[in-house]
Image (tube, rainbow, N blue to C red; front, side, top):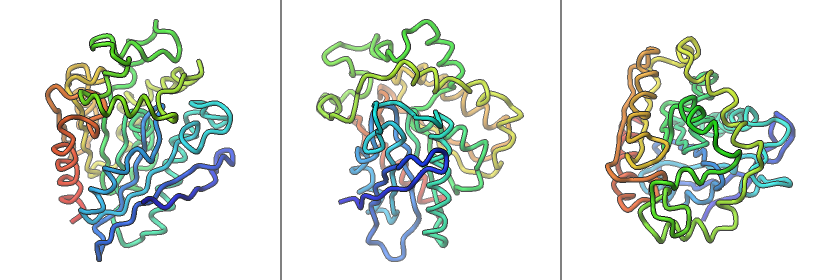
Length: 287
């Protein structure tokens, strides 16, 4: 059971909800901060957190602004601080966790929208973490160009290549997981027209080599995805993203692609394999 708490964003005084799953391991191996995706929430990661706890990691997830228990008025609305406020909130929580757990290495696991925000965090505050995992990510500038003609807030384009049982088949091959997402009132909500353009607003910044060179060169980075994730371009966009980081000087960049897996690899039919691979990577770098 997670311990629910919150913090006040320095950006605009918005209350950001958090969930902590503490490991019983003594000593603990490290701390994993989780940044979730668009139209979902932090407590969806309870199963992943339990596996991390078993491996000796404390886990802390937050509900991003406009999501979960951090919704003020409209689901998906980032508020006055916009998307930049979201990645600043990730940094603020990271700073707090370093203070709370000064003797433990801090890692960041970021999925989808959380990974887009984390790409900004990498440029601004790579000093916070001993390793970062990007899940369900992409080259955001390429995605933005590809969705330029799509109606704002309409993500149905992602399901175009799949069956249309619910409209969310692009998330996972596991029908039970898709059904759980659809049944969750805090998932899959209609997005304000401003949300997706806000995600793409500074996408070019993430492709600028000068900006990427600001990232700590020795920061371990794992980029992991399913080949059938519509954001991955069959894996090609993941390899492109990794190449950008390597060309910027990062020396420890790993790519793991799962054939046939879709967007939410932690909720896929091979989720045990995915979870074990991520934990193995974290454990190796926790020392």
